[in-house]
Figure 1 (cartoon, rainbow, N blue to C red):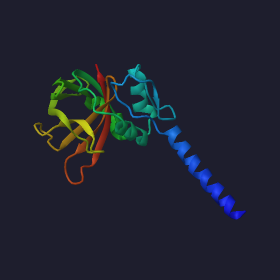
Figure 2: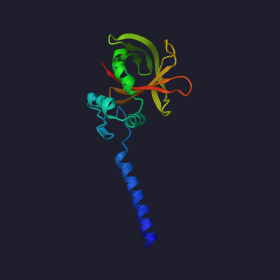
Figure 3: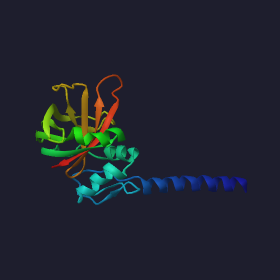
Figure 4: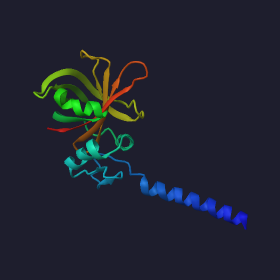
Amino acid sequence: MDVSRARLSSVSAVFLAAAGLLLLTPAAVSADSGGGVTNYGNGCVLDPGNRAATIDSLRSRCSVTQQDQIYRDAQAGSVPMGLTNGWVTRPPQLEAAAPALWIGKVFRTGPDGGTLTNRVTASGIEAFPADVYRAPSILDGAPTWALNYAPSPTPQVYDEIREVTPGVWFGYTWWREGSWPLLAAFVLTPA
């Protein structure tokens, strides 16, 4: 009888774990897939048909773990072109101060990359140029858009972005020294 209960308990545990994975693990996200809403739980959603809802989720509803999973699930997607608005999503201290210092980027790109400048101060002054190209991600090694600030006054800064839904990019800012610590996470969308 004890062996049967142990076996039943074991089978139940495996079944519940498998069911949990099936129900809780979101499908891989591709910005060009045109799929439906992807729900990461607790109000954290990616809606390919609603940029505002996706941006709100990334800024206010998704946990750090959910943001990281969204990034891992996304493909590089298309490269941004033209003027973009940007918001820092973490760390909280930088998120609060960022709007006075940084409001987005201006991309001068084609399908294979190009260059960009950052829009700094609330006036949107263009500064801090970067080269834009495909490269392996620092976070997970998969393809991403690298924003390499080597040609700028801040060559230690290195960003990477992926298009998480059409017209919404999520990414990270790394410090290119030592163990490459993460400085910030951010979201971009066309202005």
